[in-house]
Structures are given as C-alpha cells and as structure tokens.
Amino acid sequence: MRAMHQQKTERLESNVMGNSIPANVLQMLQSCRTLPNVPGVVMDVFDLSQNPDLGTAKVAKVVARDPALVAKVLKVANSSWCGVWREVTTLSQAVHLLVPI
Image (tube, rainbow, N blue to C red; front, side, top):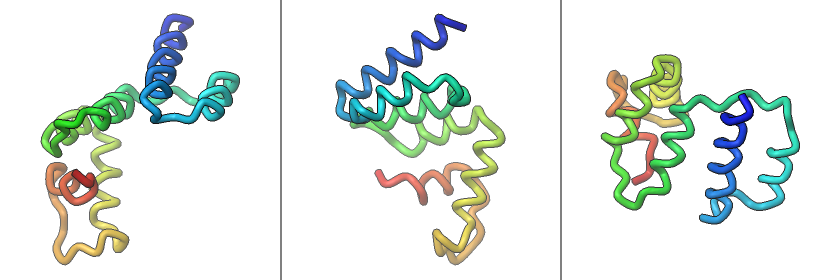
C-alpha cells in the first residue's frame, strides 16, 4: 500500500515538473488521505495525453480495458452536449469525437 502511494506521488510530481499540475494543487492532493484511488486506466490516459504523438486509436485501446469507463465515454458521446446527428456506437468513434487531437 505504501509503495502504491509512493508511486502515485512520484507520478504526480513528474507531472508538476511538466507543468501539468500546479504545485499548490499537488501539495493539497498529497496531504489528503481520503481521496479514492485513481484507476490505472485513467492514469494511463493521462500519461498518453503528455505524448505529442497521441492518436485516438491509442486512447481507445487504453480506455477499452475498463468497461465502466467505456460505457461512460459512450454515454457522453451520445449526449446532447456533443450534438451528434447519429448514434455513436463504437469506442473509437466516441474517442475521436471527444478527444481534441
């Protein structure tokens, strides 16, 4: 458990160095012990977002590992917020619609 916390802290700190997370936010996150664990898939998508060669296929491949996240992505892609004219039925369509690459 302690090793997992250390790994998350190191990932957060590396994102601060890359200007992804402000230092004051990192400090608040590190002091809070009641935050739920972030699913590995979400952290992997976050890591992918730092890659300049990011493609929607890579994002879809990672998201596909979490069925609950797939359902949420499809729900958002089919919401009125996206304003699509036809139903989005695949994860790759949803990611292409939602991920600004």
